[in-house]
Image 1: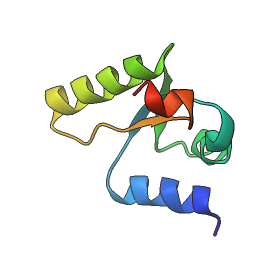
Image 2 (image 1 turned 135 degrees about the horizontal axis):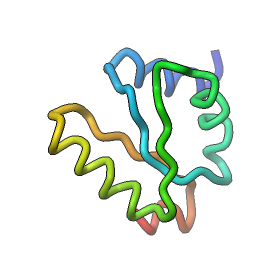
Image 3 (image 1 turned 120 degrees about the vertical axis):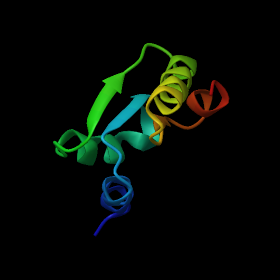
Length: 79
């Protein structure tokens, strides 16, 4: 099992059914696995900060875990 598969499997085990984010760079392998995982919906945002706010709002309004995925470098510093 590859690292990307382990990450997505862990999200499924935690009951995560939606991920907010902005793909790029080193995260592409995770997004590739996420794309082929129908149990988890990916919601594309237009900016990394928007992904963080969406995940936070989702968590506050549903009581579930809010998950945000962005790339390294500028993506990480913008969150």
